[in-house]
Length: 384
Image (tube, rainbow, N blue to C red):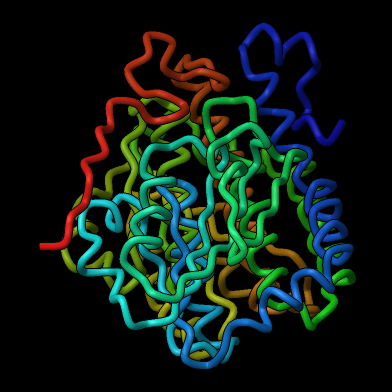
């Protein structure tokens, strides 16, 4: 059943947030289920990955939240794996400009991520890769067994369908973190991360149980939000900002940036009603820049500052209005530091949605924005 953030089933039904609440709360258990399924297919994954080599280019792709998964994972995978290149390029870019992103002579693994698997750009990106690239491999990670992505197959394709996180609500929550974990675990097939996934799930359960009420006090009446993060956490910040914008139906305007980039103009958005979600970096070098920005933000009266960190830092605790951390001493591996920040942003977005009088399961009852994007016409590509 998962964690319910203190709401009764009756409250969840009355405020039309049953699915969103359940899908946020079930993530810790879902991660362990997903990872166990990946380990069960270890031999199949090894056989697939053996066809790749150091000259292979890896592209993580998706649209919206699915694309942000790639933005978060690509910097880590680039550092940790031995491929020629690891990039995040959203399907919306691949489809509009295939000549720029699909050089024919470069051996490529296209990792396609999508909750529904029915976004028009998702299948189009794969078909363009098939047309353009002479040696193309596909890793498909989706949540909907009836979607078009789940139905794509050839001898160069490996598919994973994560039905346990096939979110029914409008906004992607468990599907984001579930697909992120699946992609990371599959590409690190030689390593058994089961203990780390269990520890991450324990941390997440504790955050879900304790953070909602504390967020209420910090974020009450905020009408705009900024989410900041460096490196992999920049991708997490993109996802966090979108979640707030989606669940409030645009009533809380949000943006994302890196801490260093925020000073170059976007800092002008700060007011006394601006919530700042700050995702602290795991690495000691980058944390120096985090502390510089946090000190600057703490000196400003125009901020409500929530800091999310992997390990306890007394100065960050002092500077923040709300400080959320996993452990006093024990750091998670870098590849597992993305999930709690995304989770905190989901919880903040849910609170903001309720505060704005929105219905979280469907913030756009008039259909202004759709769960699966509509109105996209895919034009046939021809060699120029």
